[in-house]
Image (cartoon, rainbow, N blue to C red; front, side, top):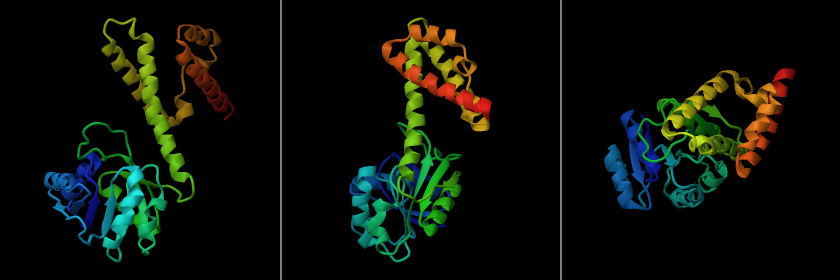
Length: 267
């Protein structure tokens, strides 16, 4: 059991507080909005820490918007006790935003569950997720323990300039890009179907199948379709029925798919 303070009142903070309490930790919650913090505490059976009160927990978890992390760290630093380990949950920022806490000689780092979520966040949403962790060695140890305690699988990211931004860009490219491609695919053929929802189900199954193969064989092993097979006439026919925006994007993707296919042949 650890004593953990969560600074934040959003959906992820609420879900994390619920889960941490459920697995036996002693959790307190705080935030600029004491009413919202009180709601999180009440929903999770955590303790509400009054604004400005000393933070006596072994671990501090900062779960606020990315642009606010540095400011919150500055505000919390005077309230921390010797030995406190501080982690933020941003996917983009590295340890630099926790400089005010690190200047006290306290270990700092990050823990970021690599998952896509929107709307209501369930308490068990982080189970089976891969977590990106990094920072000072002692902070990394706590982040890894935390991820495993919550049913996740941690991996260590190098604590070097640009590493975290590249990691977050990769995740955003895949998650956001997949949603965009799904939308464009629906739009392309929806006018030809009386029941578009059936198309959505079929496209989703296609994505699931590709993802499973990519996880098993890597993205090049999962590549299929006319670009991978070199079916030029099929590609030309596909491009003819696309609107300008979709055609431009697909043309760029075709070039990359052909490079991937060539690499696979040479490999």
